[in-house]
Image (cartoon, rainbow, N blue to C red; front, side, top):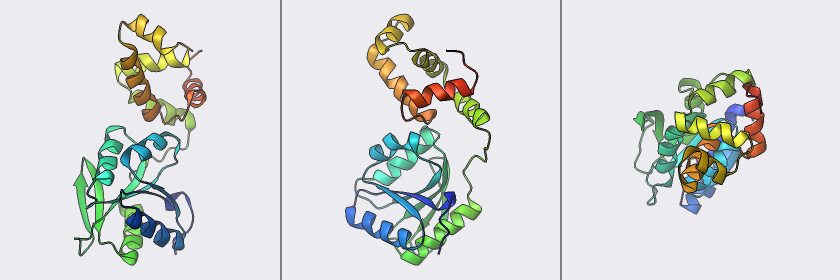
Length: 205
């Protein structure tokens, strides 16, 4: 059995409810803390407020929800400790690179999946070993693009989307788009959390 620690936090993304439920049952029985998502969008919307964990997806999902989650995780620089892809066509565990991230592909088998989670945590640490919240916040801030930084600074200063749009001479929808990306990259679930991050990096409000 896996010990219930931060390293045993599992996120399952699968469009197939039966497979999703089976994966959760197996992992919970092995001592994992499991949260399931039926789509990549559902996972990504929750991601900013989730602690680092292992992402498990279903590779042969007709809707490709799991693979979409991997692609977007890389794009948004989410803190995933490991990625395991479950595939009915797999016979032995194989390490692969997908969307620039190292993954392990395994069969849809309870023991194989548990072993893959152990292997992933041991050999594929994608986590940032960061203990200083201020330093971690600065690292996240450094990954913002120039436009995202402009939006970030104005949002935490209390400006409305309309006011930001007028000041930067861009559309309100453009502001909304970048604001959403800022929230994801900074891993803030709401404005209060975003302001706390700003204070942590020394931004005067």
